[in-house]
Length: 363
Length: 100
Image 1 (cartoon, rainbow over the protein chains, first blue to last red):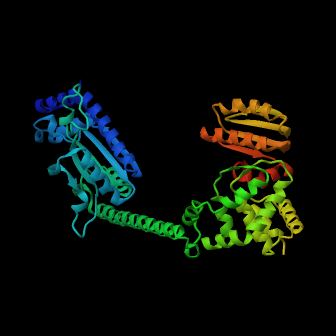
Image 2: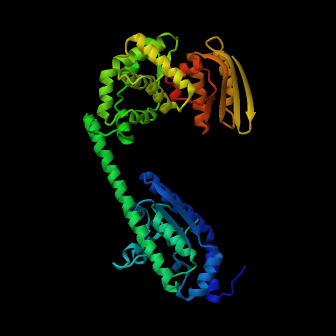
Image 3: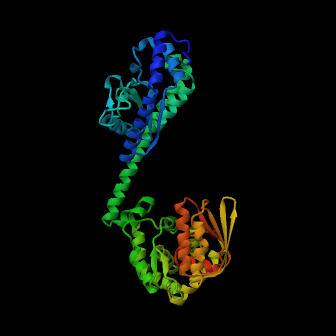
């Protein structure tokens, strides 16, 4: 076994580390499982969870530099390290609170580097907890020392992680080693990323507020006030606004209705200048009869007894286009938007207009 | 309905010829059953010479599509004649199945 030229004290610490390795591997598994559980149980969407056991060579290097600081292997708190990388800065605090509940945190040795900066300085931002596994969380008599080992959990955002990784890549271990001009640039970058983190959190909060407002307006039926977009359309579809017409159409052929996503129709609705959910409601009221006639005319000539749940909306939009007098080019535009451009769409548009004329739908 | 199944690299090319209706839907289901257990789920259905599909046919395509999707694959139907495409359009199946 290599002793890396260490003195007797450090060589003994290294031997203790080797002896501890099976326990460290088991501890790594417990910590990783617990962190993954924290994230999934609480529905937190994170960037990554990383963990590693300190490599023997790396430990030997550390002991060579400052082995005299450690009385025993238990004094080294980064033999096992784990890292949770979040997308948003407020989630670092959420993860930290949950980590505090699951593990025993050694508060005297844990550091919130986010609070260590002076008002006029920027740099490494991360939360480091020194923890132990409580016996209530995990105990295995095969690994009696597992609950005594201290390990480190770092919590930071993806932005902070990028900065820390780039900093680490410079090869300098601390700020004092870096030439001043490069340190200034690295710190400027840290300030920029801190601002970006803050903005991402603000944007997310605002989007969530907007979604809640939209859901409220939709649930209270104030459709005229709701601008048509992806969020409002999804909320609106939860009210199943086209179900009645779909059932009426299906009844003609005693057809089964297969549910399908209507989200592709959002682009069509926007293309044809539907600006609010109120515009869709108006279409259902005004074009419902024509849409029914159109659908039944096409299906009535067949023995088809299965349709998709998009049939009502498809025929509503077609009826609106036709009755507004927009004609064949706009019917083709409808099909082009929905299925992509093709010559077939021209033929299909011509036939729909013919059908509409026969039915007296075309004004 | 004549069905030819051919492996083309990681995907399966299925050529459909003729009418798919109640008289041959059971046979068609038997023909496509092996595709639902295939290791490589990606399927291209060449409909150049398919003349017609009934509701039963639509159900079979839907079944195949669900099986392909559940295995993380993609299914596309290509070169449909206009009378067949029309059936997919009026039933809204063009919104369920990818047609090129």
